[in-house]
Image (tube, rainbow, N blue to C red; front, top):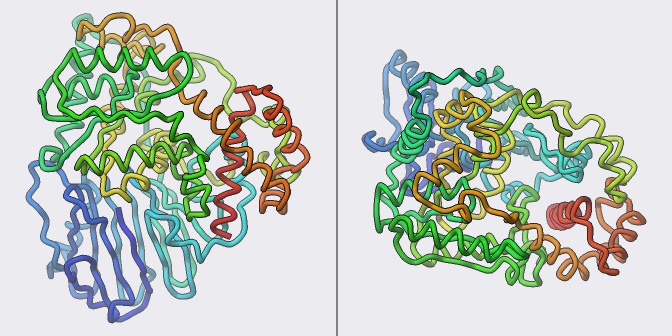
Length: 523
C-alpha cells in the first residue's frame, strides 16, 4: 500500500503535493497506493513528522491529506491512535537528527519490501522497484521455498532486499536494522455453553469483517471458487445484499472440474448474486504458458502468485468489468486448523523430503537445516496466511484492485481459536453454515478433491519443457550456487518426459521454475 524513498538526517519540510508526501526538493517521498479504499494522513509538531497510510474504515470521516501542525502532546496521541487502527496500516516517522522509522500494522494486506541504497532507504509493495538492489541468492530462503517449507521472516530470496513483517519496525540511519515485535498472544479452544449459537457467532463475525471497510463505495467482486471458504463468505454477502455483487473464479482441471461447476451453480442459485460471473479456464491459461509474463523475462517477484498466468488473466478480467475490490476466502483453512496436539501430523517440508526432491543441491540441503533461524515471532494472523496474502496482492494492485480477506480479521481469527475441535475438524464450521442454506451434499460433502493439481501437472509436463531444456543447456543461478543440482533436475525432467508424473514430489518443480525465472530477471 506504500512506496517510499527516505534519507535520514535531511532537512525535512514534508508537504502533500496531491499524489505523495515529499521533502528535500522531492528526493524524499512517501507515495500511498492510489485507491478509494486507501487513505493517508500526516501530523507534525514542528520537529517530528508522522505519515500514515492505511485502509479506510467505514463510518470514519475521511482523513485530511495535508500535514497537520499539532502540539507535541497531540502528536504523541496521534501516534498511539495510529497503532490502534483496526485495518491495515503503515507508519513512517521522520525526525531531523534521528534514523527514520517505518512500522507495519498487524493486519497486513500487501507486502512491503525494503532495500538500503547508500544513504537512502527504499521501500515498495512491488519487489521489482527494488531490483537494482538485489545481490545474490539467499540460500536459506531459497532452500525453504524449494522444500515447500516457507517461513515468515524478514528474509527474501535476494540478499539486499528484505521484508517488513507484521508489527515490525525498520530503523534506518545509514544502515538498515529490522526489529521484530513481541509474540502475539493466542488462546485455545473453549467449552461451549449449552445454548451456544456457533453459526450465529460465525455469521456475526463475517458481517463485522465485511462492515469494517466501506465496500459499498467501490465496485466489488466476490472470489467464488466453489470451495468452502469463499463459498460461506460470498453466500453470506449475497444474502445480505441481493443482486449487488458479481462473482469470479478460475476453473480447475481433472475430475473435480465438473463438481466445481455444480457447486458454484448451486451457490449462485441459493442466493442472489449479480452478473457477470467471470469464469476463466486455468488449463487454457496455465502457468508457464508462452504468453506468461514470468516466462518472458518480466520482473515478477518470486513471491507473486505461483499460478501467475491464470490469476493475472483473472485480475485483468475483473478490472475490465470495473472491479476495484475483490473479496477472497484466504485464511479460512488456518482459521479452523487443528493443532499438532489435536492432530499429530508430519510437517510440510521436513529435511527428509529432500529424498523425494533429488534436484535439491548440496548447498540447498545444508541451508535447509537452518530454515527456522531468524523467523518472525507468532503473529496476530497466521504466518502462512500472511505469506499467502503477499502472493495475492501485487497482481491485483497492478490492475487497480484492492484485496479484502475477511477470514484474516482478528475477530474471525479469535473465533476460530475458541472453537472446539468438532467444529474445526474437516471444516465443520463452513460445512454446517452452507448446509444451513439448504445446499445439498454435493456442496457440503463433495466426493472429489478440487485443487489446481492438474493445472500444475499440465504446466510442468507441457509448458515447462522448453524452459527446462533451456535451463539445463544454458545454466541457472540456482546451479551456480549449488542450490539446485542439474543432474538431479535432468533425471526428474526425463521422468516427466516419459509420462511418469508423481504429484507428491514433482509438483514442487514449479517452485524451481519460479525461482529460476526470478533469479534470471533480477540478478
